[in-house]
Structures are given as C-alpha cells and as structure tokens.
Length: 107
Image (cartoon, rainbow, N blue to C red):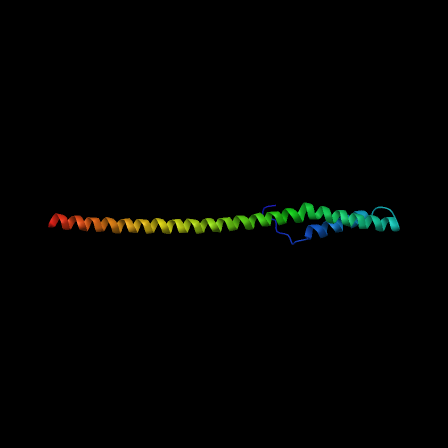
C-alpha cells in the first residue's frame, strides 16, 4: 500500500456499491431487495477491511516513521552541539595550560 492515497471510506463505499450491484443480480422482488442490502453490507465490510483499513494503517505507520525521523534529527543535532561545546572547552583548557607552561618556562 506504499504511496497509496485514497479518501477515507472510499473502499467501504466502493465495496458497498459492488455488493449492491452483485445483489441486484440475485432473485426478484423482496428477495432481490434483501440480496442488494446484504450484498451492500458485505461489500462495505470487505471494502473497509481490504482497502480502508490497510491504507489507514499505512498512513499511521508513515506518520510514526516521520515522527521518529524528526526525533532522530533533533537528537543528532543536540549530540553535535555537545561535541562541539566539549571540543571548544578542551581547546580553551589546552591553550590556558600552554600559556601557563610558557610563563613558568620564561620565569
């Protein structure tokens, strides 16, 4: 279902329509009406299970993956900020120690 974009309920409506069409081919009079209603209900249930639910599940999974990717980008950025801050602090400390060493050597 990757990349499948349908309107919510489209599978249910399509299944109901197909079920009514198939039901209209069965029986006559009240039996035909009952067959159309039953076919519509069964078709709607099938359309919901076979089309709408998988699309909704795929959309939910895609949204969750996008949310996870955003969190990972944030964590990576924060980690990089910490690394850069630590590097700058080390460099400052090394420079301070070098200046102290130079003063003790020159004194």
